[in-house]
Length: 294
Ligand SMILES: Cc1cc2nc3c(=O)[nH]c(=O)nc-3n(C[C@H](O)[C@H](O)[C@H](O)COP(=O)(O)OP(=O)(O)OC[C@H]3O[C@@H](n4cnc5c(N)ncnc54)[C@H](O)[C@@H]3O)c2cc1C
Image (cartoon, rainbow, N blue to C red; front, side, top):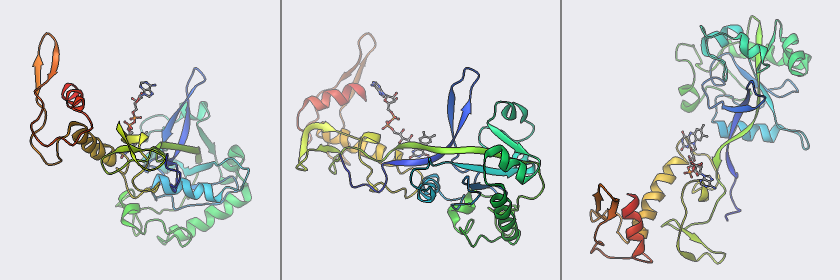
């Protein structure tokens, strides 16, 4: 196992969607609500802690950093009526979908004023009012000196191009106000098995273990536990799956000489004759295995 990674997982803000049978499902807030103009994320102290339009991983890292030791990491995604009807928030869809079921089951909290919303969410009311007022003054000028929201192409891609001058910033003015509780979630793990450039699993002495390959979530993050961009988990999964399959079959990368598959309608796929190309695989049985599953 690699234990030198910056983060063990691709963190994501999620909300817990209640079901009638008492269970919950997870809604990942990947960017379609929190980056839009007119929403902010705050902790129970009433303070913002991040650039809400950054990647889900960076938003969660900021939440972990801002959470005092011993406190459960959590936040609220706060917006107003106009925002919910225009964009939706979490599982609550925009107009014309009804909001009432989400208020009834407690997923969506509501207050006619900021203070009332704060009480419903157990957020410090004076602090929330002060911070929303500060945010509104800056957002109406299109600036966010605290967290620089909307200053990168990544931020702006998730904003509203019609919102000028900053596609990610608008004041939260005019109630009623709403909030959804955010808790830490994960889209997949970065922690995993150490591998070499052919996706072979390495032992404690960093030697490849014969016939053992690892890709996807089981393989340690090739980005060292960082989140460089979207696709940083699926991209390496596909790439190293491709490499591992070639290596296991003894087929050089870039070769067109791949094992053929003969399909017998009665018996299913059969591996074709072994490739005559240079065999660097640990065993020829790899060919048959890949041939059958191709
Ligand atoms: C909401 C969401 C959005 C995402 N978006 C992106 C994205 O945009 N780009 C990106 O790169 N990545 C994204 N990811 C991450 C990506 O989906 C994962 O990295 C990827 O699916 C991992 O693939 P995997 O095959 O290693 O594992 P999985 O996809 O988790 O597959 C493991 C399989 O094993 C099965 N299994 C588990 N235990 C057993 C058992 N004991 N016996 C038999 N079967 C078992 C499971 O049922 C599952 O089918 C996203 C993840 C989520 C949750």
